[in-house]
Length: 170
Image 1: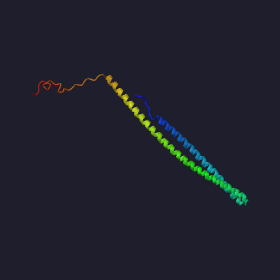
Image 2: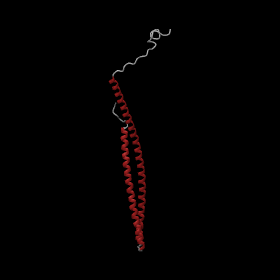
Image 3: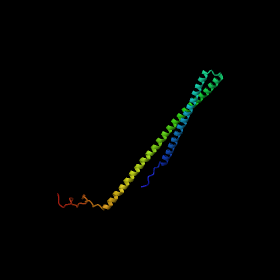
């Protein structure tokens, strides 16, 4: 019997590669999301410090120009926080898409892998059946020829009298 070959091995290999690429994409998207969230948090912290500083200045009757500069800087920080929040949202959406693609690639690979396992099992069972057949034939040959079974007489083999015993009803 021929060596087991799975005709879809190349397809399976490609699907495994695509699954690995999708897994790596998910990892990159997770890192991007973490970076965007960290940047947003840093900007929020800076904004909160500015707000606290501004309150402290107001209590100390600071000059209006200093207050205006602080307010402008605070508005700039709030804008950056909004941009960072949008980046976090985008990164989260991309991560979701990457995870969906990864799961899809896993399903594709598992389908081919399951088919390969099934075909391999069928191959090995066929091989075992063939081996058993050969073993049975060898056992029959070793035992020698079987004695011939007696053949029952047929009407054609009987003498013209019909009964074959010579006597009988006439």
